[in-house]
Length: 196
Image (cartoon, rainbow, N blue to C red; front, side):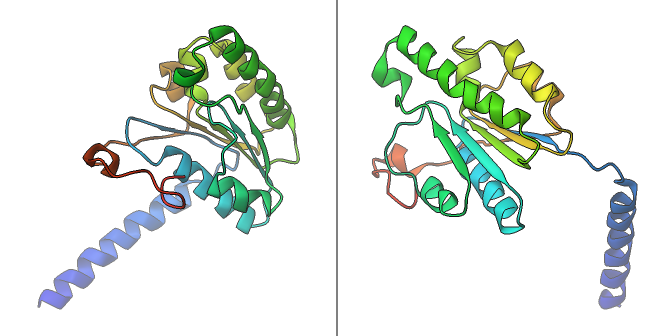
């Protein structure tokens, strides 16, 4: 009797899933936002880039804020033809120079604009770009225009805390990472291969 009920529930679930799959007929690139105060936004974005690359798609990434220290995802993805452009100034709380940070942001933004216009790219990751907008290093309207004018098949991932409302509204998928517990808060050092 229990097996029959289980089979009936699973059949109803299958029918619902099949109906949703059948209803999804539009084919185009999507805009994804990975935001929130929790860890894992960049890792999720590069996991998607890894998946795309594994399927023979072309991906590229721009890392805002990050420095030039070794990055496991970058090391692996570059070996598989993924172009990276890195702002390479490090964290803004280290540099503490608005003028040079803005100049560095706008310089790497030129690479991002090129990528967002490249019909050969299937996926572009704009890592930590939310900070560039919130700190007024990069005009929000410039980012929105570039996103709107990108090739129709191209998907984009935006990462970073405090994503602007206009970006989350225009996004197709928004995931918010929420911190529950973090080893660093307990005094455990960040670890190569785990945290970066």
